[in-house]
Image (cartoon, rainbow, N blue to C red):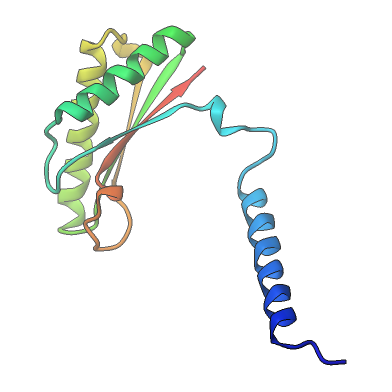
Length: 140
């Protein structure tokens, strides 16, 4: 039996698609839709903890959503890229966490509802914007 190149390529593509689907379903439990855990991402410039106008708007949106949905807690997870020293990045993450928590409080969130989790440096030495962020997670 000869498969031929087109049939072999179709079979390989199907195998890759099925493998990807099973990995994705294994990583995300079916009983926990991501829509139930709102997450807001606040991005920073490299080695900075200053809030841009976009960052302030994102934080205001998170505060409004928390008030509107009757949130019990907001988790503020702060990250820094891995460029530079680990100690410096831990301090930067702590500072970013505090800055975002202060802004949430200014936007009407009670300080006792905010739990800060400065994670520190994440990722590789790539100073991409993905690693220079704070995640605001709304818990109900």
